[in-house]
Image 1: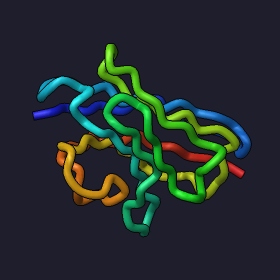
Image 2: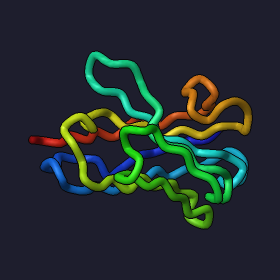
Image 3: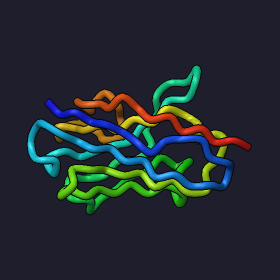
Length: 125
């Protein structure tokens, strides 16, 4: 069983930056898991944001964050990050990290097996 704890959310003005962190513990070696970030805005469904392969060689982003967000991981620290730049009000959401056991499309939330509790990001205009 993997435990995931997100941090780094907060209130920021449009155009600002935040760096989210997700610390993992338990389960197999952290590098065994492809990792993803998802978000859910009020009254909307949870949506895919970004994913990173086991050793960080491959990343995928949803179109709306390409060029602004960067996902990365440090397997020695059991941590995945989401650097968010040029933030927009529409980025306001609860952000979750998730771990995948290696099966299924990494852009689909139902393929992820472990989830954190989320960290709130609020971008003011």
